[in-house]
Length: 139
Image (cartoon, rainbow, N blue to C red):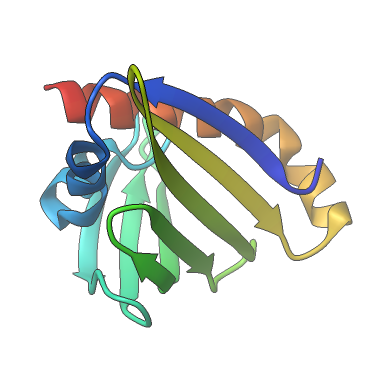
């Protein structure tokens, strides 16, 4: 299960989906599993840019995150390198389809062992992330 892959078709243009990813205010609204919210400290949406934020869980716990935007090729690709533990690389790809945009989400952890330990959290969380992205694009 390394990498974890999922996808979703969103009935909107590639540019509309990319706008929900590239705008820090919009990204903060949808990023993370259901019930989470975010406080961004920095979001430098450019290749090599830093992205540091805290996810606030529905249980009241806080989860600091440190990332780098490893690659941005507007409007089709965003690669996020999670540099804090657990370390992973997330590639978000957008492709036009007759019905809108196919969002492909590929998350690769630094080891198969880590991926195995994270699977029970990551699989549903990634689906919830895409549900929240779709809701943001369509709002």
